Length: 319
Image (cartoon, rainbow, N blue to C red):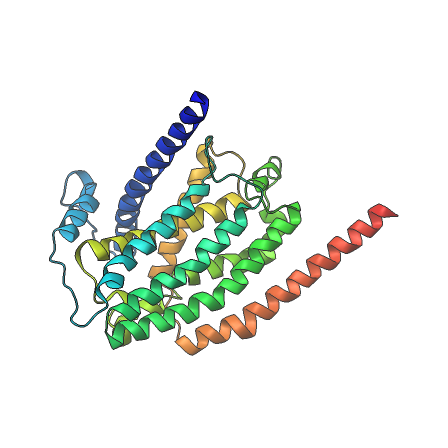
């Protein structure tokens, strides 16, 4: 009985440590993004607070947390206050399948848990937009929901294709198959679709229609300030970290304790920021047209090709 208590306590401490590390990573990811964007724009970024502006994220966090919190008149107050916590708890629950040594979320169907939580992110967008009692927030929420649902289809099919290659629904088994060769060699056609779908899921350029300032006034989170906006901001950047970590582990994994793995992860984070500084925002109808008329048929054709290839290889082995 004592061993069970020790095991549960160690799991709890590991999860707590992981959550603290995610908060610190999100803080420095914002500094990393601002510094790269500033150098691309040929200007200086944050450089006043401490050495090279290292403590700028903590200063921004304190500024946000001490701002006044407004309650919108005639809003659904309880849902309005709780929806940012709901978004934050969803992304923190995603990080529970991080492959550390003592992990409670380690079973053969953890990808189903992953898909369920990613699809539930739409509810956070819906509740924040609806409960704000603002037409601008509601319009931005509807556009974000339509975009997320559309690109979740290509995301799921691309993700499942990688799992079909290893014949398992366990996310951790991908690590075993990459001991001698990266999975990107086998998955490069649909890993590109996976990366594009991740950008659309994360509302990042060129798919950041929910933050179209000129027509939506910052989208679904326009009525939020202080700690509520901080939670929405944290959930967005924590999801960027998780998606890029997952993409890196699916295609370029060889050892979590190797520094090269984290250098490749840094490259993908810089790639997202580079896309923001380079590409313009798409028009909304072209965004939906790209998903339903181009990406979905192409990923389905790729899916059929791989399934036929598997069938052919199995028949050859049997004969």
